[in-house]
Structures are given as structure tokens and as C-alpha cells.
Image 1 (cartoon, helix red, strand yellow):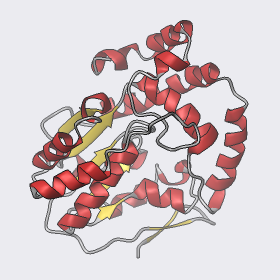
Image 2 (spheres, helix red, strand yellow; image 1 turned 135 degrees about the vertical axis):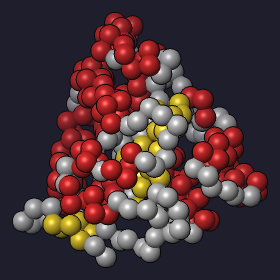
Image 3 (spheres, one colour; image 1 turned 45 degrees about the vertical axis):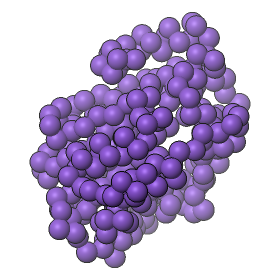
Length: 266
């Protein structure tokens, strides 16, 4: 198991199974924009195809390692090679900026109406997001949970909009907008999971039986009957920001994210 020394006191353990005989591909998303769903789908796809799935953000989170300790570590580029599925990255990490393999390999980006994602992030950070059992991230998230529970959702939304704009800008600057990048909108695929999974597999030049795709789609076709702020999957239906935020707040967010909203036709 490779280990990366992040600083004097922090080591990142990364299990690296033997590579498969494929070109690597990469999965990207944003927080509260279907990234967990994308992760669950490809965890199963890789299992069925006997492909090793390397989830660097997931492993660092489990080990309680803050993002700032790993996302700029050029040492992690030594882990990026052919034969693997890499993801799901919730933003574009700095270490990938210097990676040449990424430019030549297929990439999937899942986006969502950022206004809905922002509302979902508030409820996640304040109530439902899992907290790791160890490390600095655990301490940080416990304190943040208390802080966000005391914060007005509209104050959170306006602050978060600036950060979300940065995340989108990082993707626009670093992901090649060409035939090797496939972008999906959460709103277009959330109710059509079979078609979405099949389209992703076709793009990645992978194949599964119709029955296997249907099973993965069904396993991930959960829609809560009622809204529960304490559930990780709180509410799936698009347009939630219209119910949770005032028209004035939405207008301010629209101004902050105008380029993003235009780019993705929101």
C-alpha cells in the first residue's frame, strides 16, 4: 500500500490494486450535486468490470485528512497512471494541474443547478453529512456543524455562492472542453438513471449487460417520500432553492453565478 507523507505528522495510505488493461478515466462533480450517486454507480460498475477504483477524496476523508493537506500535493501524481478509475473529485484539486495523463484521457463531469446545490449544502453541513471517526477533519466538522446550525440559510447561501463560483471556474480552466470530456446535468439524468448509466458506459467504452445496468439503476433510484434535513438524501426534486430562499437572495446569487447559470442553461 503506497503511503504519501503529507507533512511531519500526517501520512496518507492509498490502496493501489493491480491496474486493469484499460486507459484510466476520471470522475468529477461538485458537493451536493449528485457526486455521491456518481460514486455509488461507479463503485458497482468497477466491481462488475473488475476495474480498480481509486477514490482519493474518499480515502482522505475517511482518514480525517483536511483537503488543504492533500489537494496540492504533487506527490499524488505518482498514483495517476493507466489502468484505474479515479474519482469522484468534488472540485478540481491543484495537484492535477501538472498531470499530463489527465489531458489525454476521458473525463466525466456531473453538475447541478448551483442554487439547489447551495441549499443542499447548508442542510448537509448543518445536519446530515457523515463525520469521520478520526483526524483533524472530525474536529473541524463538529465545530462547523454547530456554527452552521446557528447561521441563517441565506447568509450561508451568499457566502457559498462565491465558493461555488470558484469551483466552477477551476473546472472551466482545467478540464479540456473537447470530445474527451462528457458533461451531465443532474436535472437531466436523475429521473433517467438507466439511460444515464448506459450513456456514460458508452462514452467510456465500457460495456455491461442490459440486466446489470438496470440493476445498478434500480439500486440507486431512491427518492425520499418526504423531506428530512437529517438524511443525506434530503430531497431529490430540482428547484428546492425557490422554496428555501427569498427572491432577493436568489437574485443576488443569480448575479454572483450568472456566468455559470448561462453556461449550463440554468
